[in-house]
Image (cartoon, rainbow, N blue to C red):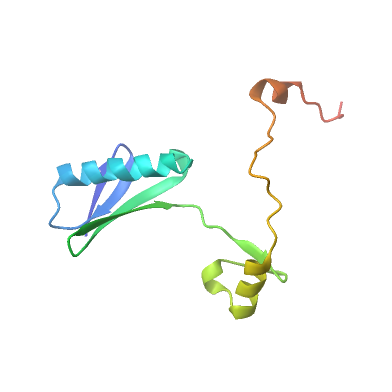
Length: 114
């Protein structure tokens, strides 16, 4: 694997791939990342691999999601079967809408502190 750079994003790509190809696939990876609604600010790197005749583009974040299950903090790959079952059985109460105040309204918010 070789390491390159595409507009400030680290890219790992196969030895037999040209820098032009790497740039093209990295651009596709960044567009896919943005299409998913994710910020480019959390995009850590893009890994490009070859699987037979297919090119696999994997944008990766440098943020790791840590969850609390039965009093323990960890990532999903470290959970045993019981913790994974608890995670699977959780109810999501998110209605899909983010109700954050607008930038203008945030300036008007007060904490009550003087």
